[in-house]
Length: 128
Image (cartoon, rainbow, N blue to C red; front, side):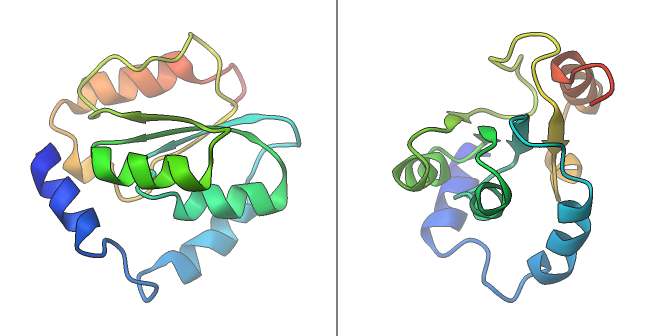
């Protein structure tokens, strides 16, 4: 699967015309307070990360299955912790360390949904 997503991102990934325009205003309304940590699971090259950082200098953790997308995101966001992983692995995040998780258009691409949900819950702070 990683090869497929690497190729997809190399060939242009998400065009500006995708559904970002209607999703972002809804996401922005529920962002956590300043100085929180956000996990963008399925971050790609960082479209939502870019917007998060316009709102506040959040601490960012980004995960994507595509090594290519993560490489491109690291160029744009050198302070972010970015990892090329699938949703079927244990995440390199301490328990209860994340304030807000975005996993937009991701769950339908996950094979081990139970593990994915377990990992999201494990990483999320109480009340996150």
